[in-house]
Image (tube, rainbow over all chains, first blue to last red; front, side, top):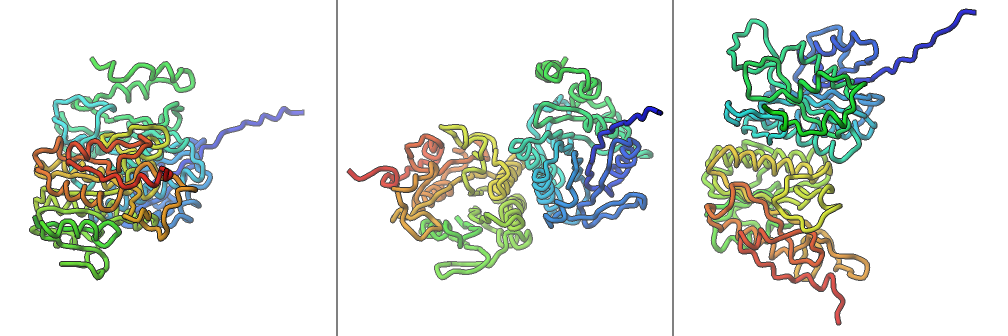
Length: 256
Length: 251
């Protein structure tokens, strides 16, 4: 009799928001290559349409909690990306704040295990360029609506992390690299490849902290943001490393 | 001063207007008029254009608007409304902003459940209660606008349980039953609360320690849960401490 080998693969159900943004579309296509991931996409903004006809995107403005519950049901991980351009300040605040609150409310009710929130390094714009900023610095956003919205949506995410047993990674990134665009040495950006890499790692990473902030960008010409934590975060194997040892010493103690 | 009151027809508004109108020109706004209104304009605080228009040529804004339970309306009034007020302050160069809210804008469950001697210089930890969180977002908005505009001074006064002279809790129609209840450790009378707002309106702005100050407006209560010393020391506020019958038996 032939031996029957049964392989048990733990499928990870991942919900990705703002799915019609080009960065999200690329991320989804990248993650779909991993057969372990079952990806569900949603678009929060009523102003957006996906340019990729192969993606099955559920459009949802997150104002109806029944729709949200259905959407998020059985998801293990939520990747919440809010960055988008809006028509008015009101639309922006609605999109970032109200929708984030509603989404997380349902996510917690449905027992989601991990939230990866994509925020923006622009919330440090008002610090002088010669400062070296790491994850322990207080954001200092301008009153521009997108900076303000990013900062305030982080506030909501943080309060959920504080209140419920869910692991939250708050990943702050700059704008995405655009090929053909002229960059100066000091410009800060993140390439899509680096973005996929760090998101993939965040999915697999077993943090023991409830709320983990990571600053990430690609180029090293600009020293404004210390990338020590990102480099440490990306370089270890989460299966073999004692996480308590990794984060025992404060990150800022390693600045040289 | 020419003072704009947003949310003037809530429970706090009439107490504040009554106290301020002797010394200041008051503009009262809300969604609907009530009999006691003077110089009233119908304004929806969640409408930026309406707030910008009514805010022209005022010296100060007092925000008493609040919405507690409905998720959408709480965001509209408590967060978007506060943003609109601060946009008006920025655009019209209005230096004095007085914002209000419940104490758990700052001291949510992560503080209140565990601690005592809580002061008003702690970071906002509202938790996720929709009323607390939306007001807390409003408070963050105030701080960011003050941080970015060196002419704006925001004072945030936080309240919770408010009592009339008859010791009836605001929003209730019956007298407090001390045999079954215990007074909330964050309580004050309407008169004392309105006086704190008047003092925040009258204080010389340069005397403030920073351009975004927050005060706990609660009487001298025996629980020692929340500290009102900043309101006393900075504003010169002196609560009349009329609530003692609510936690003591008659001899």
